[in-house]
Length: 293
Image 1: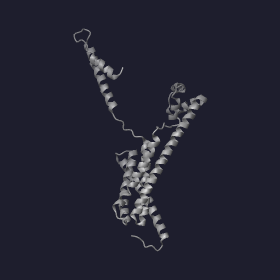
Image 2 (image 1 turned 45 degrees about the horizontal axis):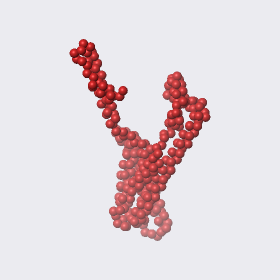
Image 3 (image 1 turned 180 degrees about the horizontal axis):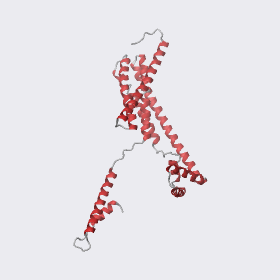
Image 4 (image 1 turned 90 degrees about the vertical axis):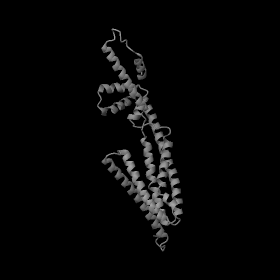
């Protein structure tokens, strides 16, 4: 009987106050039972209305991969192209790299997710075959799964006997022996879109200042791009670290600061290397070309 039906039954029940059978103890028991049922009903409704805040960890990981690459590779390219001094070259080259990079990263994520799905299906087929062809090894595997938990041998034997004949045995082995969660059907598409969008957004940030300067003011835009990316990289590194470890407390704040500085360092090294290579190639191609300030 559900809580709602039990509550309705108790609300409709009313003992006879003038009856000799309705003693004080019965009245007290009735009121206590009714209050407990009503309290459980309210708690059940609150639990049902409570929204779920669960976020798929793999989606978060895909977003971090896309943003991380997008904030370093295009930034390094735009910084390197700025050595040529032509804003149009930086904008066109940066947009071409953003589009091509987002498509490439998205396709890579899609193929990776598809490979994960195929690997899961292949392992599942092997597990299903093993449960039929070699039940002895399956029994041993189940016992090994429960062994680290220190359960009584009688309980382990009962669980093993139940699982061996259960239709959920392959699912049990996939989760607890192979530790492979079943991927959703939309996993590949979501993975591709998340990585591609993260890459494009992260790479478009250092390109923004070049849209607001003159054709020959690439070095001015570069200074603004560097300042923007230092802030963006630090915020991204801080947020990524605190998302995993937590947002409150001195320890988590310190970890977030270290993560932010690491992202700034990585982006700075990538941008500096790209810009130095472009300048070196420019000097090799035009050894008598005057140095641009």
